[in-house]
Image (cartoon, rainbow, N blue to C red; front, top):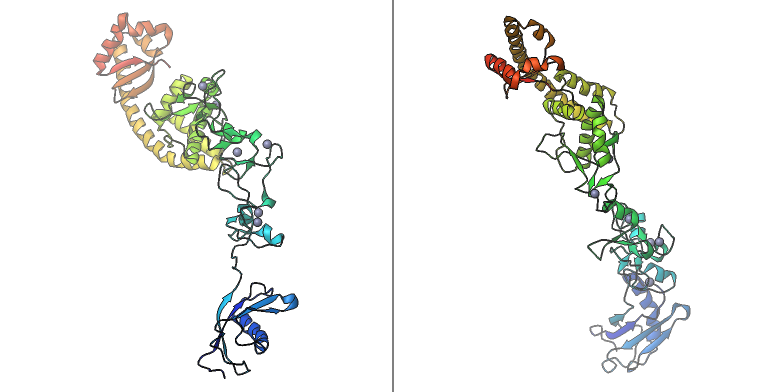
Length: 422
Ligand SMILES: [Zn+2]
Ligand SMILES: [Zn+2]
Ligand SMILES: [Zn+2]
Ligand SMILES: [Zn+2]
Ligand SMILES: [Zn+2]
Ligand SMILES: [Zn+2]
């Protein structure tokens, strides 16, 4: 008789059983199917017992202790399943293999499938079905095998360039290697972006610098220049990194109107700010802008006139294109300009007084006709210099032999007196 304290130990091999056995309940149901068959088995049987279940496959049972078993099994006999042999469960199965009717471990993933389903758990891939190209560890499934956009042939490498960002593959015929790194390559477009040729004729060097001239709000000149052929337009003062310009736009500076000049200063600075390019990205102060205009246009303008150029530009801007960024810059600049104007007007007042004294001196000297031809230009308090406009036909008269006349007048005024050349 069976001893309930010592159930009959058996092992069960379900590897040839075709029905799914997802949980304990499924095993219990299976056991209820097996038990009636077991009762007909010789308890001393030491060979394994195969149970053919037709379409459902087969099961194999093994009595683990034939010698210790009771003489006969009955419905009262208790069995204990000591071990179950089941097929290794494949958690990540290769998608294409499943389609072909097999189950294989898929350690790789299809990045495109993942991106499409927006989570991991797109398509898993075995090492036979995975597609691995040069350049980046971006594995894809056969359905997503990339084709070269230039010729349609199978892609062989992922382009590391800024346009493709390792997501576009190209064939080897359309591959341009990195000049210094054999493991990296680009498509032609990305290569030209990264290593553009200098726009200067017959230069051939890499144009690492972008021309910062702005063609329309928010869009700069497409030219690239090498350090030798780039011009620097020092709009932020002499010691700060000015705007890089291609040869065309450097020579074009002298043809710009006042309005163009101010537009370039603001638009290029806004673009620098947006692209986080190296260098300052704050609008220059009015005194610096005055110097820019002297250099570019050879004209020394009144600060109020320069301020008005900025104010008028601001009025033309709406929120479209690069206009919004320019408007923001200009609004912040307006306050600084106001401070500059106040200081400038104070200085100008001092300069005006020096100028009036100069005229009185000339009249007292009996040179009233010369005095009538002069006009005030500028006063620089730091240099204590008064600039006076003098028509060319009387300049000699005013300056005197070897500069003695102008030096003498200056000494009497207590300033350095200079003729405005612009
Ligand atoms: Zn596979
Ligand atoms: Zn895929
Ligand atoms: Zn590319
Ligand atoms: Zn190609
Ligand atoms: Zn060059
Ligand atoms: Zn340019």
